[in-house]
Length: 446
Ligand code: PHE
Image (cartoon, rainbow, N blue to C red; front, side, top):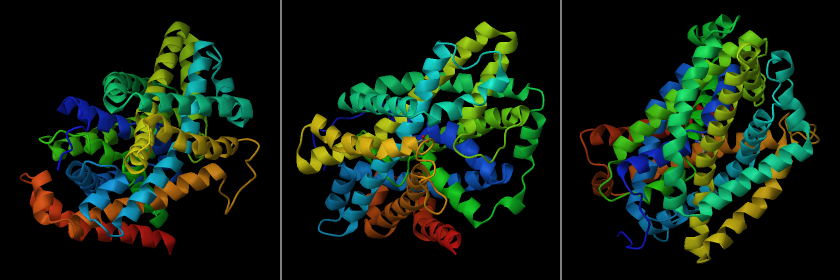
């Protein structure tokens, strides 16, 4: 079943690092903290941990089983494992979702790039925390700045994907994650030392469950899927490059634990500073980009040189983490086109990057000139994010779970995922995960 020509990850460690690289990104650093702020602090974190451990992790394993077994793109995997059936359309929807996420994710990636350039040129108001808070809204509402950042980020993603899975991704992730880890911990410590930060800690450790309604649970589940890159084929595609003897469970547990850890330390770094700076935790996507400059500018009051170094290192690390995620999105699309249309890699890339620009530009403008273009109160950017993380990713993960639980032969699943916990996993994906996803999904719609 294994085509001899298919590239493979060099070692177990590189495979796990690539998975973690896809998972750890703006979803943890940018999206998770503002979700926590919008849905009641600590209570949301608890809902998130429950969803990650009991729903997202089994879904991760399902996607990995399909990818490892079929060794194809998302659409091609369903075709291979269930020839002639309609399952492949689910693969088509995953590719569409990946494409949409890539387009708006690159806008946020572009902000990091912009902030990196600003930190290098002293443009983040070092030493002047009150001024630093307003920098983001000026930057995001400037069409020239936000579109330039978006385009450069998307180009960088495309170039890395063109380099091929091994050459491009392996080198990258091994450096990014450890750097980000150290910087994040340092930031938590600093943020906790800011005057007034206690409110943020209280906000996280004293959960207010009355704020956690059906929509909170749906967002926690959507966030768990977003953060673990699930339901859109990213895990499937990387698993299709896995060595035959690679242990899926180990990769899943490592990815899940490191990803959840990163999300929580991001919230711990951001929330105390939100309270110290007097910002509102529920402001949405702008939260982290308004708060981080405040933290760094405060640092600059007493230690300007340290602040400059930490700021630059931090935005560089966020940028790299964002890139290791965006390359997995584009890779899902490119592998599909190469496999199905037999085209060259660069052609496949253009096929998705050009429409990606057409969709990403209005997303970038959603924070400026297209701010007023809304539907049900959501901007174009918000619609793309809501559609993907609350609907398509959730349904995608459900389809992968149903496929492994009810369509694949048990013996085939067991061959890919053998181990002491197989029985628990198999029970979960048949009887627990699909109903849980459906209950959370439907109760949110009612
Ligand atoms: N998991 C990535 C993050 O947290 C985002 C992502 C979504 C990556 C979907 C791939 C596919 O930033």
